[in-house]
Amino acid sequence: MTSLNPLMTVGMQIAEAVQIHQKKSKSEAIEEAGRMLDLVRVPSGRQVLNVYPHQLSGGMRQRVMIAMALACKPKLLIADEPTTALDVTIQAQILGLIRELQTELGMGVIFITHDMGVVHEVADRVAVMYHGDIVETGTLNQVFLEPKHAYTKALLKAAPKLGSMRGKAVPHSFPVLSMEEELKGNTTSVEIPGKPVDYSEAPLLTVDRLHVVFPRKHNFFGKVTHQVHAVNDVSFKLWKGETLGVVGESGSGKSTIGNAILGLLEEATGDIRYKDIDLLNPTSAQRKLVKKDVSFIFQDPLASLNPQMTIGECVEEPFIIHEPQMSKQQREQKAKELLQKVASSQSFIAIIHMSFPAACCSV
Picture 1 (tube, rainbow, N blue to C red):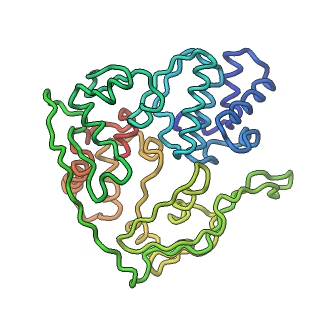
Picture 2 (tube, rainbow, N blue to C red):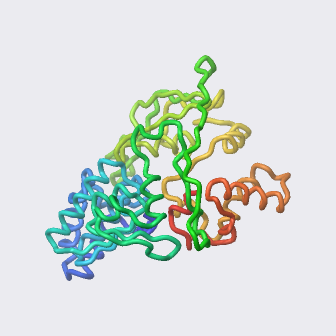
Picture 3 (spheres, rainbow, N blue to C red):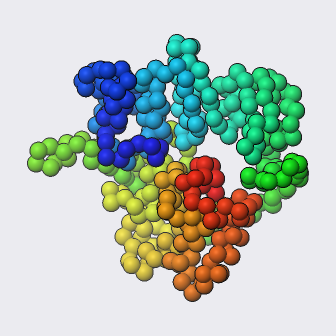
């Protein structure tokens, strides 16, 4: 999704590829761009032609990227995690679309993914990689039903099955980018004791009648002529220690709710309270407290991290802002401890994140 040009509309970017490779006129290329957006199930695709990437949700931007890749009907398609940012219903549609076009065009597809479920859905043959090497290849049935390599077996075992591991951690057997010659590890699941939520206490977060309306079109005099209701009358509460799952299709407003809670949207109206703090109208002191207490894991890690900073510097930055009394040595040590917890490794602390895959940047 970081591949889209923020200065060009969606229609211009798709049409550009069509004009270059299919030698069509500008009007014909725009028409083809609209058709491709319809093909990848972008709602109101013709209207989306005139918007910029930042005005779309992460899932919508991913679909635009897929439309660009398929616009010229390629004979070979290299799909690098094409459905990672999509919800399961749209993911199924995109996978079906790729298969349909593959049949129609006789297209060869190299499908790169970490999701074994997606592999099972799309692949005829499978190649499993570990530490830069292909450690096992075979037909779909061979790899899934009769895996030979220890890493393949661990991948299949780690794939969660609904209801099969309630209260247990997913087994983790292999360190990230391990240099070990022999693959070893403990695959024993660990029981995680649950902690009951005390609903007699006041909620940690209260969202009441949240509305977010984005202006889309203006007339000559600057008056808004078209609006998009991204979030419409949403209310919920969250208690300390509780997890609330927000589920919906791409573009349904899930990320917009998160951005509104953080106070990133001027368009948000309603009432959002963290403890006793009005998040839509906080004082300067309250804003500083909220920035320390409320964290956010963004959907696109590559677009969220500073490309000129190392992984270690990115992790240390919050301590510089919120814990100014910490020395540089203390910040570095804390960064190493955090990376060890989430990635089982400190070895990439000095690496620039742009040289990392998105999955590693997410940690």
